Length: 239
Picture (cartoon, rainbow, N blue to C red):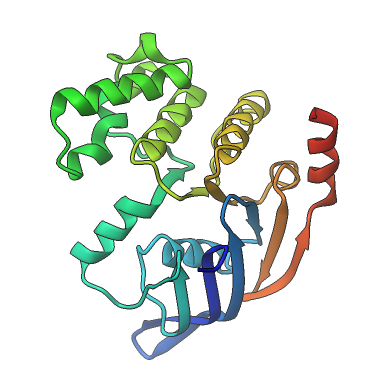
């Protein structure tokens, strides 16, 4: 067994639109270790969202290979893809993706509904995760009654409740002010310290600088893949 939670080799992805073909990913090689915290940066059109969708088993790739915890992920039907997503991956999005007519507790409990966990058990677990996020007293509030930071903490609780091995975060601080962004990053770092690998897609340098490694994409290829020494200095100072 390797220590990689994600291993991608020579990954290619194109989108065909009529007679036009857009080659988005052009031979990506990438290795994410178990428990690692990595950021993926790149300008709009660099391929980072496409890469995240493939890692999240939301999209297929055309050539190359993708291994998730040593399981080869290739074209699979939606039932099988959903099973692996549920088992391995938690998602956090810039727009929170909360269901507007469900309260905080119900939103957090949702992944367990798909795992056929009883209502009582999943709601109790959801309350525990809201407690961890400091939001227990907001359990019965709708998303429209919550601030951006509260919504993102609920989204993180929802991502954690199925005990994933990896969290994919797409611009998780993109809709937040700088102070709230800091708070959300602190939560993600605490989550990472429990052994869950985290990949953050971001265009913000101050967010990327809080991760162990920074991968930069440009025009569908990896431009650089570097250990972030600032992160290690920060870790030493904390200890």
